[in-house]
Amino acid sequence: MKFELPKLPYELDALEPMISKRTLEFHYGKHHQTYVTNLNNLIAETRYENSDIETIIKDADGPLFNNAAQVWNHTFYFEELIKNGKPAPQGVFAEALEKSFGNYAGFKDTFAKAAIGLFGSGWVWLVKNQSGTLEIINESNAGNPLRRGLKPLLTCDVWEHAYYLDYQNRRADYINAFWSIINWDVIEKRF
Ligand code: MN
Image (cartoon, rainbow, N blue to C red):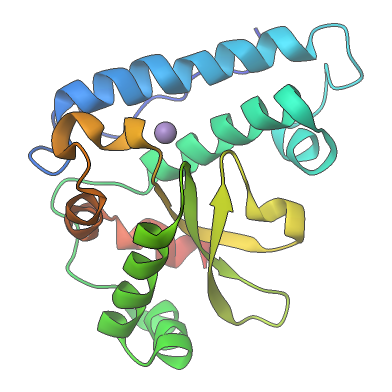
């Protein structure tokens, strides 16, 4: 198998109570794993057999795009989480956030509104555009900003499978909890 499920940088219960062990058992252990398995099956004997995942995301359509992007998006999301993250970003990244959103609270507010307003399943992204400015964008389903030439910095999975076991229909509560488990060191490095 070409693509493999990456190891989580923490234990399955590390993000409790914001994200439960049971959610991660399904979200990481079942959903993420299934996208990896599907992707490996779909690329077999196609021209993407030896492609890297970013090439597939930029190039492919239909099930191939959906599964490649879902593998990439989940890896990116799980990597940016941590138990007891620092309370706010710092350094040049924090300055860029202030430039685009006024301050950290303004950024959180804009991001949360985008996440709550996203209809159905999808991902909210903080991205750096080609002029170096930060923007928040919504993508439906498996959508990934690499396809639009944008550099992803932070994402929140707002598919119901990401929060339903812990929060049921209360997406806003999930977003609120999300802020305390972001590993800002990872985001600062991505920036
Ligand atoms: Mn998900």
